[in-house]
Length: 283
Length: 283
DNA sequence: GCGGGCGATACCCTGCGGGTATGGAGGACG
DNA sequence: CGTCCTCCATACCCGCAGGGTATCGCCCGC
Image 1 (spheres, helix red, strand yellow):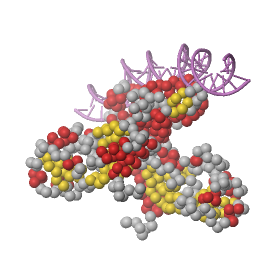
Image 2: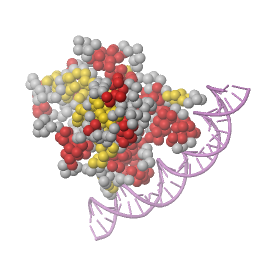
Image 3: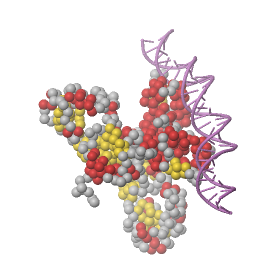
Image 4: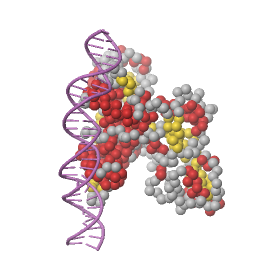
Protein backbone atom coordinates (compact mmCIF):
# COMPACT_ATOMS: atom_id res chain seq x y z
CA UNK A 1 0.00 0.00 0.00
CA UNK A 2 2.91 2.31 -0.72
CA UNK A 3 1.88 5.07 -2.99
CA UNK A 4 1.53 5.25 -6.72
CA UNK A 5 3.35 7.95 -8.64
CA UNK A 6 1.78 9.69 -11.57
CA UNK A 7 4.59 8.37 -13.77
CA UNK A 8 3.46 4.83 -13.03
CA UNK A 9 -0.11 5.72 -13.82
CA UNK A 10 0.90 7.29 -17.12
CA UNK A 11 2.89 4.20 -17.95
CA UNK A 12 0.02 1.92 -17.16
CA UNK A 13 -2.48 3.99 -19.10
CA UNK A 14 -0.19 3.93 -22.12
CA UNK A 15 0.15 0.15 -21.96
CA UNK A 16 -3.56 -0.31 -21.34
CA UNK A 17 -4.39 1.82 -24.34
CA UNK A 18 -1.86 0.23 -26.67
CA UNK A 19 -2.16 -3.29 -25.26
CA UNK A 20 1.40 -3.64 -26.44
CA UNK A 21 4.49 -2.93 -24.34
CA UNK A 22 6.70 -2.03 -27.27
CA UNK A 23 4.35 0.55 -28.77
CA UNK A 24 3.52 1.95 -25.34
CA UNK A 25 7.23 2.35 -24.56
CA UNK A 26 7.74 4.13 -27.84
CA UNK A 27 4.84 6.46 -27.12
CA UNK A 28 6.29 7.21 -23.71
CA UNK A 29 9.75 7.81 -25.10
CA UNK A 30 11.42 5.08 -23.04
CA UNK A 31 12.67 1.59 -23.78
CA UNK A 32 10.50 -1.45 -23.38
CA UNK A 33 12.28 -3.26 -20.50
CA UNK A 34 11.94 -0.46 -17.92
CA UNK A 35 8.31 -0.20 -18.87
CA UNK A 36 7.75 -3.91 -18.32
CA UNK A 37 9.46 -3.66 -14.97
CA UNK A 38 7.44 -0.63 -13.92
CA UNK A 39 4.13 -2.31 -14.71
CA UNK A 40 5.24 -5.47 -13.00
CA UNK A 41 6.21 -3.54 -9.89
CA UNK A 42 2.89 -1.72 -9.96
CA UNK A 43 0.99 -4.99 -10.12
CA UNK A 44 3.07 -6.36 -7.29
CA UNK A 45 2.47 -3.32 -5.15
CA UNK A 46 -1.27 -3.32 -5.72
CA UNK A 47 -1.44 -7.05 -5.30
CA UNK A 48 -3.54 -7.57 -8.41
CA UNK A 49 -2.83 -8.56 -11.99
CA UNK A 50 -3.60 -5.70 -14.36
CA UNK A 51 -2.78 -7.36 -17.68
CA UNK A 52 -3.02 -10.82 -19.14
CA UNK A 53 0.16 -11.07 -21.15
CA UNK A 54 0.16 -13.29 -24.15
CA UNK A 55 2.92 -13.51 -26.65
CA UNK A 56 0.79 -11.59 -29.10
CA UNK A 57 -0.26 -8.49 -27.25
CA UNK A 58 -1.87 -8.21 -23.85
CA UNK A 59 -5.38 -7.88 -22.45
CA UNK A 60 -6.74 -6.02 -19.46
CA UNK A 61 -7.94 -7.86 -16.40
CA UNK A 62 -11.02 -6.49 -14.62
CA UNK A 63 -8.71 -4.71 -12.18
CA UNK A 64 -6.85 -3.30 -15.17
CA UNK A 65 -10.08 -1.96 -16.63
CA UNK A 66 -10.83 -0.21 -13.39
CA UNK A 67 -7.34 1.24 -13.11
CA UNK A 68 -7.50 2.49 -16.67
CA UNK A 69 -10.73 4.38 -16.13
CA UNK A 70 -9.91 5.71 -12.67
CA UNK A 71 -6.29 6.35 -13.56
CA UNK A 72 -7.26 8.58 -16.45
CA UNK A 73 -9.40 10.76 -14.23
CA UNK A 74 -6.63 10.82 -11.64
CA UNK A 75 -4.12 11.97 -14.24
CA UNK A 76 -6.57 14.61 -15.36
CA UNK A 77 -6.90 15.81 -11.80
CA UNK A 78 -3.13 16.05 -11.38
CA UNK A 79 -2.78 17.94 -14.63
CA UNK A 80 -5.63 20.22 -13.61
CA UNK A 81 -3.98 20.99 -10.29
CA UNK A 82 -0.71 22.03 -11.85
CA UNK A 83 -2.22 23.99 -14.70
CA UNK A 84 -4.62 25.92 -12.51
CA UNK A 85 -1.87 26.68 -10.03
CA UNK A 86 0.29 28.02 -12.84
CA UNK A 87 -2.55 30.16 -14.08
CA UNK A 88 -3.18 31.55 -10.62
CA UNK A 89 0.25 33.17 -10.49
CA UNK A 90 0.98 36.62 -11.83
CA UNK A 91 -1.12 37.31 -14.92
CA UNK A 92 -3.96 35.36 -13.34
CA UNK A 93 -6.78 34.87 -15.79
CA UNK A 94 -9.87 32.82 -16.45
CA UNK A 95 -9.92 30.49 -19.45
CA UNK A 96 -13.25 29.94 -21.17
CA UNK A 97 -13.48 26.94 -23.50
CA UNK A 98 -15.95 27.09 -26.35
CA UNK A 99 -16.56 25.96 -29.88
CA UNK A 100 -16.26 28.79 -32.38
CA UNK A 101 -19.75 30.22 -32.74
CA UNK A 102 -20.98 27.99 -29.97
CA UNK A 103 -22.26 30.72 -27.71
CA UNK A 104 -25.74 31.23 -29.17
CA UNK A 105 -24.91 34.91 -29.28
CA UNK A 106 -24.82 35.17 -25.51
CA UNK A 107 -21.10 35.62 -25.02
CA UNK A 108 -20.91 39.43 -25.35
CA UNK A 109 -23.54 39.94 -22.70
CA UNK A 110 -21.93 37.37 -20.40
CA UNK A 111 -18.49 38.88 -20.71
CA UNK A 112 -19.83 42.38 -20.24
CA UNK A 113 -21.66 41.30 -17.14
CA UNK A 114 -18.57 39.66 -15.68
CA UNK A 115 -16.30 42.53 -16.53
CA UNK A 116 -18.50 44.90 -14.58
CA UNK A 117 -17.18 43.33 -11.43
CA UNK A 118 -14.33 45.28 -9.91
CA UNK A 119 -12.37 42.09 -9.20
CA UNK A 120 -12.86 40.60 -12.66
CA UNK A 121 -9.89 38.75 -14.13
CA UNK A 122 -9.00 38.89 -17.82
CA UNK A 123 -10.95 36.21 -19.66
CA UNK A 124 -9.02 34.19 -22.18
CA UNK A 125 -11.09 32.45 -24.84
CA UNK A 126 -9.96 28.95 -25.74
CA UNK A 127 -11.65 27.96 -28.96
CA UNK A 128 -11.64 24.26 -29.54
CA UNK A 129 -13.48 21.82 -31.72
CA UNK A 130 -12.22 19.02 -29.53
CA UNK A 131 -13.47 17.74 -26.23
CA UNK A 132 -14.18 20.85 -24.25
CA UNK A 133 -15.40 18.86 -21.28
CA UNK A 134 -11.96 17.26 -21.10
CA UNK A 135 -10.41 20.72 -21.08
CA UNK A 136 -12.33 21.48 -17.92
CA UNK A 137 -11.39 18.18 -16.35
CA UNK A 138 -7.67 18.49 -17.00
CA UNK A 139 -7.38 22.16 -16.17
CA UNK A 140 -6.80 23.61 -19.61
CA UNK A 141 -9.92 25.69 -19.02
CA UNK A 142 -11.79 26.99 -16.00
CA UNK A 143 -15.27 27.40 -17.43
CA UNK A 144 -16.78 26.25 -20.70
CA UNK A 145 -19.74 26.65 -22.98
CA UNK A 146 -20.92 23.12 -23.67
CA UNK A 147 -23.94 21.43 -25.11
CA UNK A 148 -26.11 18.91 -23.39
CA UNK A 149 -26.55 16.06 -24.20
CA UNK A 150 -23.83 16.25 -26.86
CA UNK A 151 -21.10 16.61 -24.24
CA UNK A 152 -20.39 14.28 -21.37
CA UNK A 153 -21.00 16.48 -18.38
CA UNK A 154 -19.97 14.04 -15.67
CA UNK A 155 -17.86 15.66 -13.03
CA UNK A 156 -18.97 19.10 -14.13
CA UNK A 157 -21.39 21.49 -12.55
CA UNK A 158 -23.59 23.30 -15.03
CA UNK A 159 -25.91 26.24 -15.41
CA UNK A 160 -28.43 26.11 -18.22
CA UNK A 161 -28.21 29.09 -20.58
CA UNK A 162 -30.39 28.37 -23.59
CA UNK A 163 -32.09 25.64 -25.54
CA UNK A 164 -31.31 25.62 -29.24
CA UNK A 165 -32.85 23.68 -32.07
CA UNK A 166 -30.40 22.09 -34.43
CA UNK A 167 -30.50 22.40 -38.19
CA UNK A 168 -28.71 20.66 -40.98
CA UNK A 169 -26.01 22.44 -42.95
CA UNK A 170 -26.11 21.06 -46.45
CA UNK A 171 -24.93 22.01 -49.95
CA UNK A 172 -27.42 24.01 -52.08
CA UNK A 173 -26.95 21.43 -54.76
CA UNK A 174 -27.56 18.43 -52.55
CA UNK A 175 -30.72 16.47 -53.45
CA UNK A 176 -31.93 16.64 -49.87
CA UNK A 177 -31.70 20.45 -49.96
CA UNK A 178 -34.71 20.44 -52.23
CA UNK A 179 -36.90 19.41 -49.36
CA UNK A 180 -38.19 21.88 -46.80
CA UNK A 181 -37.61 19.75 -43.75
CA UNK A 182 -35.80 16.53 -43.02
CA UNK A 183 -35.75 13.72 -40.56
CA UNK A 184 -32.76 11.97 -39.07
CA UNK A 185 -33.64 8.88 -41.06
CA UNK A 186 -32.99 10.82 -44.25
CA UNK A 187 -29.36 11.15 -43.25
CA UNK A 188 -28.77 7.44 -42.92
CA UNK A 189 -26.21 7.07 -45.67
CA UNK A 190 -24.81 10.57 -45.69
CA UNK A 191 -21.32 11.07 -44.31
CA UNK A 192 -21.25 13.21 -41.17
CA UNK A 193 -17.82 14.67 -40.50
CA UNK A 194 -16.12 13.86 -37.25
CA UNK A 195 -14.09 16.33 -35.33
CA UNK A 196 -11.08 14.90 -33.58
CA UNK A 197 -13.54 15.31 -30.70
CA UNK A 198 -15.53 12.27 -31.74
CA UNK A 199 -12.61 10.32 -33.08
CA UNK A 200 -14.18 7.23 -31.55
CA UNK A 201 -13.16 5.37 -34.68
CA UNK A 202 -16.42 6.42 -36.26
CA UNK A 203 -16.48 6.49 -40.01
CA UNK A 204 -16.70 9.75 -41.86
CA UNK A 205 -14.25 12.45 -42.84
CA UNK A 206 -12.26 14.14 -40.10
CA UNK A 207 -12.06 17.90 -40.15
CA UNK A 208 -9.88 20.19 -38.12
CA UNK A 209 -11.73 23.46 -38.18
CA UNK A 210 -14.93 25.15 -39.17
CA UNK A 211 -13.64 26.40 -42.50
CA UNK A 212 -12.74 22.89 -43.55
CA UNK A 213 -16.12 21.68 -42.47
CA UNK A 214 -18.01 24.29 -44.44
CA UNK A 215 -15.86 23.58 -47.45
CA UNK A 216 -16.78 19.91 -47.30
CA UNK A 217 -20.43 20.75 -46.83
CA UNK A 218 -20.45 23.20 -49.76
CA UNK A 219 -18.88 20.55 -51.93
CA UNK A 220 -21.65 18.18 -51.03
CA UNK A 221 -19.20 15.73 -49.55
CA UNK A 222 -20.74 15.93 -46.09
CA UNK A 223 -23.52 17.44 -44.03
CA UNK A 224 -23.40 18.77 -40.49
CA UNK A 225 -25.87 19.26 -37.69
CA UNK A 226 -25.37 22.70 -36.21
CA UNK A 227 -27.28 24.79 -33.73
CA UNK A 228 -29.77 27.27 -35.03
CA UNK A 229 -27.76 30.25 -33.85
CA UNK A 230 -24.65 29.01 -35.60
CA UNK A 231 -26.69 28.85 -38.80
CA UNK A 232 -27.09 32.63 -38.72
CA UNK A 233 -23.76 33.04 -40.46
CA UNK A 234 -24.36 32.37 -44.13
CA UNK A 235 -21.74 30.39 -46.00
CA UNK A 236 -21.33 30.21 -49.75
CA UNK A 237 -23.02 27.23 -51.28
CA UNK A 238 -24.51 26.08 -47.98
CA UNK A 239 -28.11 26.24 -46.87
CA UNK A 240 -29.78 25.17 -43.67
CA UNK A 241 -32.77 22.88 -43.31
CA UNK A 242 -34.66 22.01 -40.16
CA UNK A 243 -34.44 18.42 -38.97
CA UNK A 244 -37.75 17.63 -37.39
CA UNK A 245 -36.67 14.91 -35.02
CA UNK A 246 -33.19 16.11 -34.10
CA UNK A 247 -33.01 16.50 -30.33
CA UNK A 248 -32.45 20.10 -29.32
CA UNK A 249 -29.17 21.08 -27.75
CA UNK A 250 -29.04 22.81 -24.39
CA UNK A 251 -26.26 25.34 -24.11
CA UNK A 252 -24.81 25.20 -20.62
CA UNK A 253 -22.10 26.99 -18.76
CA UNK A 254 -20.00 24.29 -17.15
CA UNK A 255 -17.15 24.21 -14.64
CA UNK A 256 -15.44 21.54 -12.58
CA UNK A 257 -17.73 20.50 -9.82
CA UNK A 258 -14.93 20.36 -7.32
CA UNK A 259 -14.04 23.96 -7.97
CA UNK A 260 -14.07 26.19 -4.96
CA UNK A 261 -12.63 29.03 -6.95
CA UNK A 262 -14.03 32.39 -6.08
CA UNK A 263 -13.36 33.57 -9.62
CA UNK A 264 -15.28 30.76 -11.27
CA UNK A 265 -18.17 31.37 -8.92
CA UNK A 266 -18.14 35.05 -9.80
CA UNK A 267 -18.15 34.29 -13.50
CA UNK A 268 -21.05 31.89 -13.16
CA UNK A 269 -23.05 34.40 -11.19
CA UNK A 270 -22.37 37.08 -13.78
CA UNK A 271 -23.37 34.76 -16.61
CA UNK A 272 -26.57 33.77 -14.87
CA UNK A 273 -27.45 37.41 -14.40
CA UNK A 274 -26.61 38.25 -18.01
CA UNK A 275 -28.80 35.52 -19.44
CA UNK A 276 -31.80 35.67 -17.15
CA UNK A 277 -34.40 38.12 -18.45
CA UNK A 278 -34.39 41.02 -15.99
CA UNK A 279 -38.11 40.55 -15.40
CA UNK A 280 -37.56 36.99 -14.24
CA UNK A 281 -34.80 37.94 -11.89
CA UNK A 282 -35.75 37.64 -8.27
CA UNK A 283 -34.01 40.86 -7.32
CA UNK B 1 5.77 21.71 -18.01
CA UNK B 2 7.33 18.42 -17.05
CA UNK B 3 5.04 16.39 -14.93
CA UNK B 4 4.30 16.47 -11.26
CA UNK B 5 4.59 13.31 -9.20
CA UNK B 6 2.13 12.47 -6.49
CA UNK B 7 4.98 12.55 -3.99
CA UNK B 8 5.56 16.18 -4.79
CA UNK B 9 1.90 16.94 -4.36
CA UNK B 10 1.82 15.18 -1.02
CA UNK B 11 4.85 17.15 0.07
CA UNK B 12 3.31 20.41 -0.98
CA UNK B 13 -0.01 19.66 0.68
CA UNK B 14 1.79 18.84 3.91
CA UNK B 15 3.72 22.10 3.85
CA UNK B 16 0.63 24.06 2.87
CA UNK B 17 -1.31 22.59 5.74
CA UNK B 18 1.42 23.04 8.32
CA UNK B 19 2.77 26.30 6.94
CA UNK B 20 6.03 25.15 8.46
CA UNK B 21 8.71 23.14 6.69
CA UNK B 22 10.02 21.49 9.81
CA UNK B 23 6.68 20.19 11.03
CA UNK B 24 5.67 19.16 7.53
CA UNK B 25 8.89 17.21 7.11
CA UNK B 26 8.30 15.47 10.40
CA UNK B 27 4.76 14.59 9.39
CA UNK B 28 6.07 13.18 6.12
CA UNK B 29 8.79 11.23 7.84
CA UNK B 30 11.65 12.90 6.00
CA UNK B 31 14.18 15.58 6.89
CA UNK B 32 13.57 19.23 6.29
CA UNK B 33 16.21 19.99 3.63
CA UNK B 34 14.97 17.49 1.03
CA UNK B 35 11.49 18.85 1.60
CA UNK B 36 12.64 22.42 1.01
CA UNK B 37 14.39 21.33 -2.16
CA UNK B 38 11.37 19.45 -3.42
CA UNK B 39 9.06 22.42 -2.93
CA UNK B 40 11.57 24.75 -4.49
CA UNK B 41 11.92 22.48 -7.51
CA UNK B 42 8.15 22.28 -7.79
CA UNK B 43 7.83 26.06 -7.76
CA UNK B 44 10.55 26.31 -10.34
CA UNK B 45 8.94 23.78 -12.61
CA UNK B 46 5.52 25.40 -12.38
CA UNK B 47 7.02 28.84 -12.77
CA UNK B 48 5.02 30.29 -9.86
CA UNK B 49 5.75 30.96 -6.22
CA UNK B 50 3.61 28.78 -3.99
CA UNK B 51 4.73 30.03 -0.59
CA UNK B 52 5.84 33.29 0.91
CA UNK B 53 8.61 32.23 3.25
CA UNK B 54 9.24 34.31 6.29
CA UNK B 55 11.53 33.41 9.08
CA UNK B 56 8.53 32.66 11.24
CA UNK B 57 6.49 30.23 9.20
CA UNK B 58 5.26 30.58 5.66
CA UNK B 59 2.12 31.75 3.93
CA UNK B 60 0.41 30.54 0.79
CA UNK B 61 0.42 32.63 -2.35
CA UNK B 62 -2.77 32.67 -4.46
CA UNK B 63 -1.22 30.01 -6.67
CA UNK B 64 -0.44 28.01 -3.54
CA UNK B 65 -4.04 28.22 -2.42
CA UNK B 66 -5.16 26.86 -5.77
CA UNK B 67 -2.61 24.07 -5.73
CA UNK B 68 -3.63 23.10 -2.22
CA UNK B 69 -7.29 22.74 -3.13
CA UNK B 70 -6.78 21.11 -6.50
CA UNK B 71 -3.89 19.00 -5.27
CA UNK B 72 -6.00 17.47 -2.54
CA UNK B 73 -8.63 16.35 -5.00
CA UNK B 74 -5.91 15.05 -7.31
CA UNK B 75 -4.40 13.01 -4.50
CA UNK B 76 -7.83 11.68 -3.67
CA UNK B 77 -8.28 10.66 -7.29
CA UNK B 78 -4.96 8.82 -7.34
CA UNK B 79 -5.76 7.04 -4.11
CA UNK B 80 -9.20 6.16 -5.46
CA UNK B 81 -7.71 4.69 -8.62
CA UNK B 82 -5.37 2.37 -6.77
CA UNK B 83 -7.84 1.33 -4.12
CA UNK B 84 -10.60 0.56 -6.59
CA UNK B 85 -8.22 -1.36 -8.80
CA UNK B 86 -7.12 -3.43 -5.84
CA UNK B 87 -10.71 -4.12 -4.93
CA UNK B 88 -11.53 -5.19 -8.47
CA UNK B 89 -9.13 -8.10 -8.33
CA UNK B 90 -10.06 -11.53 -6.99
CA UNK B 91 -12.54 -11.17 -4.11
CA UNK B 92 -14.11 -8.25 -5.92
CA UNK B 93 -16.67 -6.54 -3.73
CA UNK B 94 -18.64 -3.36 -3.33
CA UNK B 95 -17.98 -1.17 -0.29
CA UNK B 96 -20.90 0.79 1.12
CA UNK B 97 -20.05 3.65 3.47
CA UNK B 98 -22.62 4.63 6.08
CA UNK B 99 -23.01 5.99 9.55
CA UNK B 100 -24.19 3.35 12.02
CA UNK B 101 -27.97 3.56 12.02
CA UNK B 102 -27.87 6.04 9.17
CA UNK B 103 -29.96 4.05 6.75
CA UNK B 104 -33.45 5.12 7.87
CA UNK B 105 -34.28 1.41 7.99
CA UNK B 106 -33.94 1.08 4.22
CA UNK B 107 -30.75 -0.94 4.08
CA UNK B 108 -32.22 -4.45 4.33
CA UNK B 109 -34.55 -3.84 1.42
CA UNK B 110 -31.78 -2.25 -0.66
CA UNK B 111 -29.37 -5.09 -0.04
CA UNK B 112 -32.03 -7.69 -0.73
CA UNK B 113 -32.91 -5.98 -3.95
CA UNK B 114 -29.30 -5.86 -5.08
CA UNK B 115 -28.55 -9.41 -4.08
CA UNK B 116 -31.35 -10.64 -6.28
CA UNK B 117 -29.19 -9.85 -9.25
CA UNK B 118 -27.31 -12.86 -10.55
CA UNK B 119 -24.12 -10.82 -10.98
CA UNK B 120 -24.25 -9.19 -7.55
CA UNK B 121 -20.94 -8.77 -5.76
CA UNK B 122 -20.56 -9.20 -2.02
CA UNK B 123 -21.36 -5.91 -0.32
CA UNK B 124 -19.01 -4.83 2.43
CA UNK B 125 -20.38 -2.34 4.92
CA UNK B 126 -17.95 0.37 6.00
CA UNK B 127 -19.36 2.06 9.07
CA UNK B 128 -17.83 5.41 9.73
CA UNK B 129 -18.65 8.44 11.77
CA UNK B 130 -16.12 10.40 9.78
CA UNK B 131 -16.39 12.04 6.41
CA UNK B 132 -18.17 9.47 4.30
CA UNK B 133 -18.14 11.73 1.27
CA UNK B 134 -14.34 11.70 1.45
CA UNK B 135 -14.43 7.91 1.50
CA UNK B 136 -16.16 7.97 -1.85
CA UNK B 137 -13.77 10.53 -3.24
CA UNK B 138 -10.62 8.68 -2.24
CA UNK B 139 -11.83 5.21 -3.12
CA UNK B 140 -12.26 3.74 0.33
CA UNK B 141 -15.90 3.18 -0.61
CA UNK B 142 -17.85 2.71 -3.83
CA UNK B 143 -21.28 3.87 -2.74
CA UNK B 144 -22.46 5.60 0.39
CA UNK B 145 -25.51 6.57 2.37
CA UNK B 146 -25.14 10.27 3.03
CA UNK B 147 -27.27 13.13 4.21
CA UNK B 148 -27.99 16.29 2.35
CA UNK B 149 -27.24 19.07 3.16
CA UNK B 150 -25.14 17.81 6.07
CA UNK B 151 -22.59 16.26 3.72
CA UNK B 152 -20.68 18.01 0.98
CA UNK B 153 -21.87 16.20 -2.11
CA UNK B 154 -19.66 17.92 -4.64
CA UNK B 155 -18.19 15.49 -7.11
CA UNK B 156 -20.76 12.89 -6.19
CA UNK B 157 -23.81 11.71 -8.05
CA UNK B 158 -26.79 11.07 -5.85
CA UNK B 159 -30.16 9.40 -5.74
CA UNK B 160 -32.64 10.64 -3.18
CA UNK B 161 -33.93 7.93 -0.88
CA UNK B 162 -35.86 9.57 1.93
CA UNK B 163 -36.42 12.81 3.78
CA UNK B 164 -36.05 12.57 7.54
CA UNK B 165 -36.85 15.04 10.26
CA UNK B 166 -34.19 15.47 12.89
CA UNK B 167 -34.76 15.30 16.60
CA UNK B 168 -32.66 16.17 19.59
CA UNK B 169 -31.20 13.42 21.75
CA UNK B 170 -31.06 14.76 25.29
CA UNK B 171 -30.74 13.45 28.83
CA UNK B 172 -34.01 12.75 30.68
CA UNK B 173 -32.75 14.92 33.45
CA UNK B 174 -31.80 17.86 31.30
CA UNK B 175 -33.86 21.00 31.94
CA UNK B 176 -34.68 21.31 28.26
CA UNK B 177 -36.11 17.78 28.27
CA UNK B 178 -39.02 19.11 30.25
CA UNK B 179 -40.29 20.93 27.19
CA UNK B 180 -42.27 19.22 24.49
CA UNK B 181 -40.55 20.85 21.56
CA UNK B 182 -37.48 22.96 21.08
CA UNK B 183 -36.00 25.45 18.68
CA UNK B 184 -32.41 25.71 17.55
CA UNK B 185 -32.05 28.91 19.50
CA UNK B 186 -32.63 26.94 22.72
CA UNK B 187 -29.40 25.05 22.04
CA UNK B 188 -27.26 28.15 21.89
CA UNK B 189 -25.06 27.44 24.90
CA UNK B 190 -25.32 23.66 24.95
CA UNK B 191 -22.25 21.70 23.86
CA UNK B 192 -22.81 19.69 20.72
CA UNK B 193 -20.27 16.90 20.31
CA UNK B 194 -18.08 16.87 17.27
CA UNK B 195 -17.13 13.73 15.46
CA UNK B 196 -13.63 13.70 14.07
CA UNK B 197 -15.72 14.36 10.96
CA UNK B 198 -16.29 17.97 11.91
CA UNK B 199 -12.96 18.51 13.57
CA UNK B 200 -12.92 21.95 12.00
CA UNK B 201 -11.52 23.24 15.25
CA UNK B 202 -15.06 23.69 16.49
CA UNK B 203 -15.48 23.72 20.22
CA UNK B 204 -17.28 20.88 21.95
CA UNK B 205 -16.37 17.40 23.04
CA UNK B 206 -15.01 14.99 20.43
CA UNK B 207 -16.45 11.51 20.39
CA UNK B 208 -15.27 8.47 18.51
CA UNK B 209 -18.36 6.30 18.31
CA UNK B 210 -22.05 6.16 18.95
CA UNK B 211 -21.72 4.53 22.36
CA UNK B 212 -19.52 7.35 23.57
CA UNK B 213 -21.94 9.87 22.21
CA UNK B 214 -24.94 8.34 23.94
CA UNK B 215 -23.00 8.13 27.16
CA UNK B 216 -22.26 11.83 27.03
CA UNK B 217 -25.85 12.62 26.20
CA UNK B 218 -27.20 10.46 29.03
CA UNK B 219 -24.86 12.23 31.44
CA UNK B 220 -26.25 15.57 30.33
CA UNK B 221 -22.84 16.67 29.13
CA UNK B 222 -23.98 17.09 25.54
CA UNK B 223 -26.92 16.88 23.18
CA UNK B 224 -27.05 15.57 19.63
CA UNK B 225 -29.23 16.13 16.62
CA UNK B 226 -30.11 12.79 15.11
CA UNK B 227 -32.48 11.67 12.41
CA UNK B 228 -35.90 10.53 13.41
CA UNK B 229 -35.26 6.96 12.36
CA UNK B 230 -32.10 6.78 14.40
CA UNK B 231 -34.17 7.85 17.39
CA UNK B 232 -36.12 4.60 17.19
CA UNK B 233 -33.47 2.84 19.23
CA UNK B 234 -34.09 3.77 22.84
CA UNK B 235 -31.05 4.47 25.00
CA UNK B 236 -30.97 4.50 28.78
CA UNK B 237 -31.36 7.95 30.21
CA UNK B 238 -31.89 9.57 26.84
CA UNK B 239 -35.09 10.96 25.38
CA UNK B 240 -35.82 12.59 22.07
CA UNK B 241 -37.49 15.92 21.50
CA UNK B 242 -38.53 17.47 18.19
CA UNK B 243 -36.68 20.59 17.11
CA UNK B 244 -39.17 22.70 15.25
CA UNK B 245 -36.81 24.65 13.06
CA UNK B 246 -34.10 22.06 12.41
CA UNK B 247 -33.79 21.56 8.67
CA UNK B 248 -34.74 18.04 7.64
CA UNK B 249 -32.06 15.71 6.35
CA UNK B 250 -32.37 14.03 2.98
CA UNK B 251 -30.94 10.54 2.91
CA UNK B 252 -29.24 9.99 -0.43
CA UNK B 253 -27.39 7.17 -2.06
CA UNK B 254 -24.19 8.69 -3.41
CA UNK B 255 -21.36 7.50 -5.63
CA UNK B 256 -18.47 9.14 -7.46
CA UNK B 257 -19.84 11.00 -10.40
CA UNK B 258 -17.01 9.88 -12.62
CA UNK B 259 -17.80 6.25 -11.96
CA UNK B 260 -18.45 4.19 -15.01
CA UNK B 261 -18.56 1.06 -12.95
CA UNK B 262 -21.18 -1.41 -14.04
CA UNK B 263 -21.42 -2.68 -10.48
CA UNK B 264 -22.11 0.70 -8.96
CA UNK B 265 -24.75 1.35 -11.58
CA UNK B 266 -26.38 -1.99 -10.79
CA UNK B 267 -26.41 -1.22 -7.09
CA UNK B 268 -27.96 2.18 -7.66
CA UNK B 269 -30.65 0.71 -9.86
CA UNK B 270 -31.42 -1.93 -7.29
CA UNK B 271 -31.61 0.64 -4.51
CA UNK B 272 -33.90 2.87 -6.51
CA UNK B 273 -36.19 -0.06 -7.14
CA UNK B 274 -36.15 -1.10 -3.49
CA UNK B 275 -37.06 2.33 -2.21
CA UNK B 276 -39.62 3.43 -4.78
CA UNK B 277 -43.11 2.41 -3.71
CA UNK B 278 -44.20 -0.31 -6.17
CA UNK B 279 -47.27 1.74 -7.11
CA UNK B 280 -45.08 4.66 -8.18
CA UNK B 281 -42.79 2.50 -10.23
CA UNK B 282 -43.17 3.05 -13.96
CA UNK B 283 -42.95 -0.63 -14.74
C1' DG C 1 10.02 -26.96 -37.93
C1' DC C 2 11.35 -22.48 -38.27
C1' DG C 3 11.20 -17.54 -38.10
C1' DG C 4 9.45 -13.45 -36.16
C1' DG C 5 7.36 -10.78 -32.72
C1' DC C 6 6.73 -9.81 -27.94
C1' DG C 7 7.59 -9.70 -23.17
C1' DA C 8 11.03 -10.95 -19.46
C1' DT C 9 15.72 -11.15 -17.63
C1' DA C 10 20.46 -9.69 -16.85
C1' DC C 11 23.49 -6.15 -16.24
C1' DC C 12 25.18 -1.43 -15.98
C1' DC C 13 25.05 3.52 -15.09
C1' DT C 14 23.27 7.97 -13.98
C1' DG C 15 20.43 11.04 -11.46
C1' DC C 16 17.31 11.92 -7.98
C1' DG C 17 15.53 11.46 -3.43
C1' DG C 18 17.12 11.00 0.94
C1' DG C 19 20.45 11.91 4.81
C1' DT C 20 23.78 15.12 8.00
C1' DA C 21 26.17 19.39 8.84
C1' DT C 22 26.08 24.14 8.55
C1' DG C 23 25.10 28.86 6.96
C1' DG C 24 22.23 33.12 6.85
C1' DA C 25 18.35 36.03 7.81
C1' DG C 26 14.84 37.87 10.55
C1' DG C 27 12.06 38.35 14.73
C1' DA C 28 11.84 38.36 19.95
C1' DC C 29 13.52 39.71 24.04
C1' DG C 30 16.50 41.14 27.67
C1' DC D 1 20.75 47.52 20.46
C1' DG D 2 22.92 43.29 20.68
C1' DT D 3 22.10 38.50 21.22
C1' DC D 4 19.85 34.41 20.63
C1' DC D 5 16.66 31.47 18.61
C1' DT D 6 13.93 29.87 14.98
C1' DC D 7 13.39 28.59 10.46
C1' DC D 8 14.60 27.94 5.79
C1' DA D 9 18.46 27.40 2.40
C1' DT D 10 22.93 25.58 0.96
C1' DA D 11 26.65 22.22 0.69
C1' DC D 12 27.95 17.73 0.38
C1' DC D 13 27.46 12.75 0.35
C1' DC D 14 25.25 8.17 -0.38
C1' DG D 15 22.17 4.51 -2.12
C1' DC D 16 18.70 3.04 -4.97
C1' DA D 17 15.34 3.46 -8.38
C1' DG D 18 14.61 4.31 -13.01
C1' DG D 19 16.49 4.32 -17.42
C1' DG D 20 19.50 2.14 -21.18
C1' DT D 21 21.56 -2.04 -24.06
C1' DA D 22 21.98 -6.86 -24.93
C1' DT D 23 19.87 -11.07 -24.92
C1' DC D 24 16.83 -14.88 -23.81
C1' DG D 25 12.50 -17.66 -23.91
C1' DC D 26 8.08 -18.35 -25.51
C1' DC D 27 4.32 -18.73 -28.53
C1' DC D 28 2.03 -18.20 -32.86
C1' DG D 29 1.71 -18.44 -37.73
C1' DC D 30 3.38 -20.03 -41.90
